[in-house]
Image (spheres, rainbow, N blue to C red):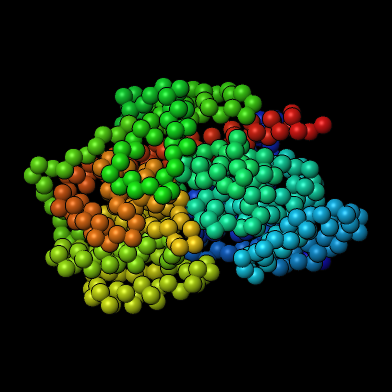
Length: 517
């Protein structure tokens, strides 16, 4: 039988005793569309003993060199492991028929939305049965599934057989439309992670509120190398920080703010993001069981950037950038219509609409529709569509543009983004951002402070905001400075990975003390 492909162990200094050995379960690892997952896993590997398992075979298309090197450290299943997995399933059926019957009914007897989703969960069930044995042999202590769908299915099944706790994470369109087993998974998980405040509230209120009391907010980390001119002294300014108590209160306020359906285009959101300095964060080395209140994030206080009394316009043509997978939640059709309005108003601009991957990622062929709309609006000379961009190319692309636009929308199905990672990177690279107010975007695009926010599906408002920045370079620069500061603090990969590792450690210790006989 074919055995799974494994990798050489990671060579690093030994970890302190007592830290949990974490199995991270993903469909693919690494994946070019998920650089934030890649950075998170690699960051956790520096802090905890982590083994990565991918349910499918390797998929290294468009992956950076660093990602391709990390793929060697992944335990990969896929079709090559089919007979090994099926053999373990049959063994379990023979030895524990009643338990396997219960697990299969719990997993598969659901009203799945489509055959593809059902198939993913069937494979995840079988893989989970196999992984239970692998986890036991490897001395795994807890399982982490960064997505609540097939990967969480495998984690739940493996944990049920091996007697291990599992954690998962839900975000954006995982919550609506949700898989039929999401409520049960949130109930079974011993820990649920959210990566923005809006989705934290949505998770806690999902279904019957099964996740209340066990949702932890940890923002993603920046995935690109920092700009060379970032001022460390500026990021540590004491006047931009408050006490630990105020930080935790701001953290809690943000987590309970329902931003999903409110027009926040002209609201003041800075009070949801005040926090302690990096210096005090680093000084906190101990914490109580299941209490991570002392590792609050560092959020700066930001002032409103006023319009200039005598505005000087940006150099022409103004270079706009939008970036992301071509999906119904991105609102790129609205952006093209806004560009049509800008052209009618006589603004000299260009737009780079980079992305794609709809067909590759099972999202349909939206590129054809966007290309047709570009032609219909007479924008072919102004709008370039270079296709998918490698993560290696993203820094250059960001540096070559003036304004980043994120016209995200909530689809009729309820699907929506959380905080697009492209927005985070644009802020970190000093671009003023124009976005909509969908879901968690107002947590980072704070109107008049780090960018301009407009209602979704409103091409005219989007065009107005772009035109405002194009005609006031000083205002745009002020927003960009604030955005860089916010991104550096809120999405600090070291601080956020520290927080996630501590949450894992604390919650595992708490589970071990209270839930294991």
